[in-house]
Amino acid sequence: MKAFIFDLDGVLVSTDKYHYQAWKKIADKEGIYFDEKINDRLRGVSRMDSLEIILERAEKQYTEEEKLALATEKNDLYRDLLKNLTPADRLAGVTETLEKLKEKGYLLAIGSSSRNTPVILSKIGYDGYFDAVSDGNNITKSKPDPEVFEKAAEMLSLPAKECFVVEDSLAGIDAAKAGGFKAIGIGGAAIYAKTDYPINAITDILKLI
Ligand code: BG6
Ligand code: MG
Image 1 (cartoon, rainbow, N blue to C red):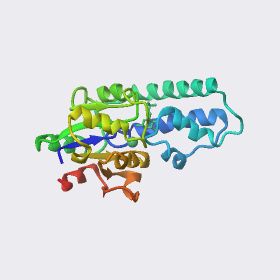
Image 2: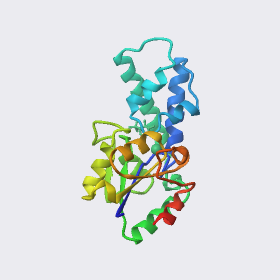
Image 3: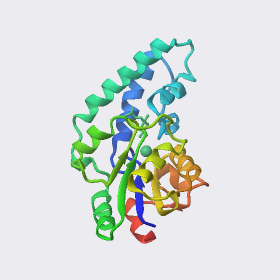
């Protein structure tokens, strides 16, 4: 194995809680039931697909225009929360794990559905740190489609079978497996049947190599 492709939200940085807070405000305003369990289904999926999941519990039908307005409003709330991000928001063990992998010669990439990836990487002090960044801005199909990871592997000039994918979402594990990658699962993805290597902490990656 030559490389690690990391999901961002909920794997390297605690931005998953900001996605939840922003969507919760939108759902409450619209009178739609939404909780952390439903939020788990939003992990890894695009902004518009996330909105569709939330609207499953809506009593009224939303027009495409209304949906776009809600997604924009959510993103504005989310971007406001991102203003407070600092390198201290990297999740526990991330800094040391990535440094050790680099030392051992592994290539490191990002594979995230988020269009906010560049601003987040910059805020947490990871501008230019990764060998490749594949995100919501360079894909047409969101996870569970493997496109975001395939693009990352292409940027690294490596075949999928030489790359691990590290994910906290079920959609991300499905995407990794569909693309022929080895899937490491953390958080909710650690108890998912399709995950190849379940881990409890990001530092456990160092035991796999
Ligand atoms: C993923 C998150 O990383 O990015 C999803 O897990 C989110 O919850 C998706 O919907 C898209 O993010 P953004 O920042 O483009 O709205
Ligand atoms: Mg995630």
